[in-house]
Image 1 (cartoon, rainbow, N blue to C red):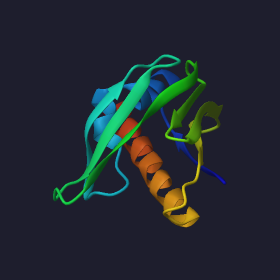
Image 2: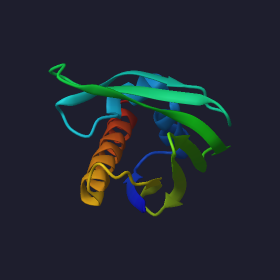
Image 3: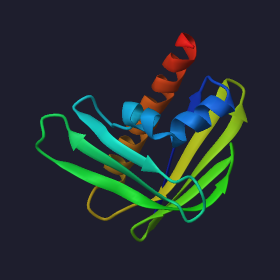
Image 4: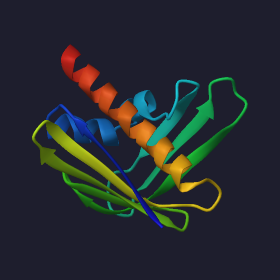
Length: 138
């Protein structure tokens, strides 16, 4: 089953794209809740390039690596990647209030669709808040 989440970011596409694909930015927004954080991220932004993010509970009780391979890139428009036996697509499109970022991904059997959608949406919302806050200070 495919799950879709989206947000609108009130910032220019170059800033949105850069924040989504730069490790120094990823570690600042890539968390679904305040008690989690991303401690490390790597990005080789090219088709066939690898990426990874280390996500951990801030209390140190658990953590995991989210990693995969970029399968298609269209700068400022689309990122496709595979992670394990699952796939995801990220679209960046101009909207009336900024850049619409939509992520469509394959679900997994461990967590409910609602949990997966909620977690990915929370991360995307964190991304939008981060980019918009950064936009105001620069």
